[in-house]
Image (tube, rainbow, N blue to C red; front, side, top):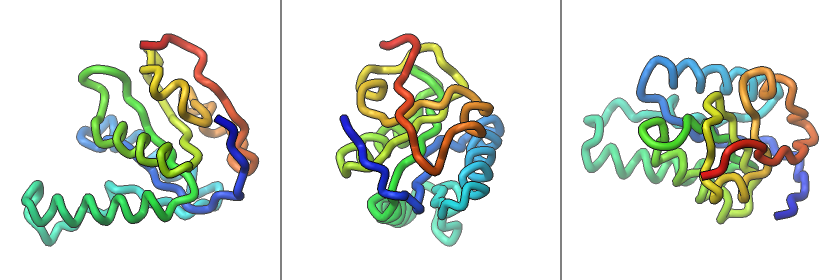
Length: 151
């Protein structure tokens, strides 16, 4: 799939944030992206504490707010923690929604044990590890296809 650099400014940061390791990883990417001058929407920062966690009202508000920001974003950056137990269904859904909406999708991963072909063949770039995320040319958004195991 060919992409045209639109000078993206708004980023939707799709990620799991259910344990300390995941929270630390998403905080790292929030910092990297904001230091590049992007307006970052990170769902973990918008949890609507006025509603009971996982209640019907909370789920509706979170879903609608997240999808609104995803659709308004110029691109999606997703943190992918691997297949199986490390895989977050919400993050994968958000990647698919971004792809269908025609957005750049860049995947950051620190666990490179193999990625499903639906991700490897649809995303614009893959960043393996923190140094690649720091060194990536966020201004020009070059393609960086997946090189590794495919499941």
